[in-house]
Image (tube, rainbow, N blue to C red; front, side):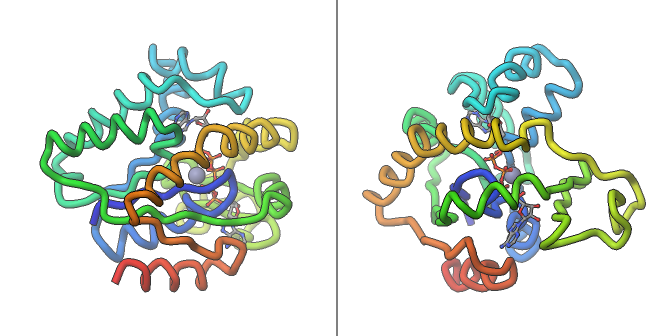
Amino acid sequence: KRLILVGPPGSGKGTQSPLIKDEYCLCHLATGDMLRAAVAAKTPLGVKAKEAMDKGELVSDDLVVGIIDDALKKPSCQKGFILDGFPRTVVQAQKLDEMLENRGVKVDKVLNFAIDDAILEERITGRWIHPSSGRTYHTKFAPPKVPGVDDVTGEPLIQRKDDTPAVLKSRLDAFHRQTEPVIDYYNKKGIVANLPAEKKPEEVTGVIKKALS
Ligand code: AP5
Ligand code: ZN
């Protein structure tokens, strides 16, 4: 299947992705993860993206469209994919349609992680991440067995630089202004499934599986 995950920061996109990826054997492309890797490696792309990311603003459409265009060429992404955090502007959605048209395929479903803003600060400020696997924990909702340590590898967990209340505010602002119109764009095509993203992770997974069956 070819899926798009859309929702505000902390709505659960990265948490649900590995679960649906395993079930449907897809490739998972998260532009945020790819950009953070580029920033850490100080590549030319990372250098260009860093300032906007630190402020909680969107990186330019050209940069992210380029990343996705390259990534979709990978053999593992030919049968299906999960796009997590892309498209985030209507221009990105239009470019994606062009890319897919050229390949003779289209998006099957857009999973909309619908949730109230008020819940998100607690989720974001309690988040801990295992960078190399992308596994996500939460001090209250999904604590690791040992605080600060990944359950599987025993490696240290980190917090994201943009996971502060102040930067969250501008990320939310970007979501409402630039990304909500993307949901309308796909609503017009009739392919949006709305998820109750404030519910427990298992319940959200259940609704996703139903929407995809
Ligand atoms: P990105 O990395 O995409 O961040 P985001 O959209 O802000 O989303 P998050 O990763 O914060 O949230 P999530 O929904 O994945 O939450 P998670 O599942 O981890 O983007 C970062 C930056 O990169 C952007 O600001 C921008 O600068 C740039 N960028 C990226 N893509 C771009 C694009 N296309 N165009 C332009 N710029 C782009 O969950 C959060 C926490 O809550 C975790 O601790 C988790 O354990 C917990 N949790 C999850 N689900 C539940 C639940 N159901 N109940 C309780 N707790 C839960
Ligand atoms: Zn994420």
